Amino acid sequence: MPNSWSDEEVRVLVGWTAQDYGASMILRLETVTNLPESADDVLVSRLVMNRDQAVQLGNMLYEMSGTLPPKKGKAPLLDRVMGRKPD
Image 1 (cartoon, rainbow, N blue to C red):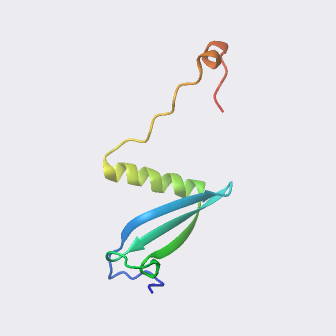
Image 2: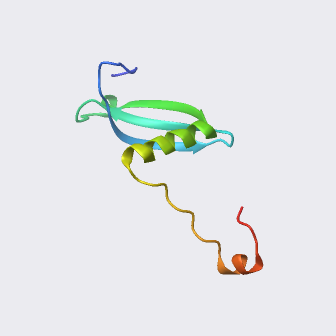
């Protein structure tokens, strides 16, 4: 069972989740080196990062993929008419 990263091997991302803890978050990455035959073939890594690190990582991935981050939706019409600012 793999239990650590190696600079010599290339792993493929097969899944991820994130948990928000306010000022920080945990990004859980699941990676494999070949077609997994069992759960033991999947390396699970957990990365703790603060909000600034998460934004930097997200922006770098958007830039590298050549896409733009999703646009924020318009505020509801009533809020726009009443001049309310979004949270």
